[in-house]
Amino acid sequence: MADVDGDCVDTVDDSTLNLDPCEALASGFLGDAYTLTVRVTRSGDPGKACSVDYTTAAVTATQGTDYTETAGTLEWAAGDADDKFIEIPVLATFEEAVQGTADTLTLTISNPTDAVIGNCDETTISIEDLT
Image 1: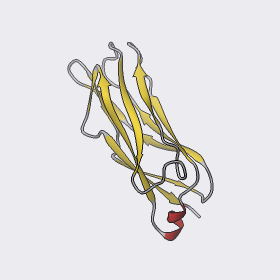
Image 2: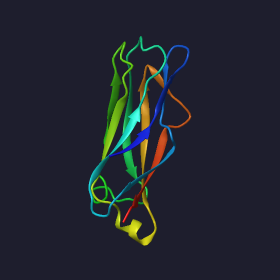
Image 3: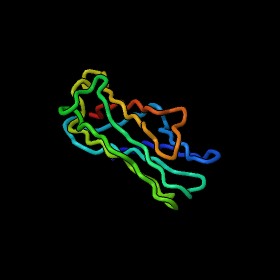
Image 4: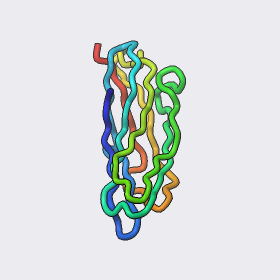
């Protein structure tokens, strides 16, 4: 499993949700399926519930062949400061990686409720082959 870390930092009244880093690299062996896990943390005063939507989109990767489209909502209850995780199924390491180019997709957060999105609302994920 590959991990990408994200941040949720506190502002005056609302949490700020950020994807960090804005670029990520995941590696696997050609033909191996695995799950890419993106972690989003919440810091500051967790006194209010908050949520944010997320979705993946193809850049040079092919949805349904290289990875499974992923969308949903992350939710924090009032008092919940635990990390939340977004899992993106990678169906197989991209064949183009064997030819020296990694395929990419994006993960975007949007539509925050009782939170604001920081300066990075989209992460570009490149996947390469280790063989």
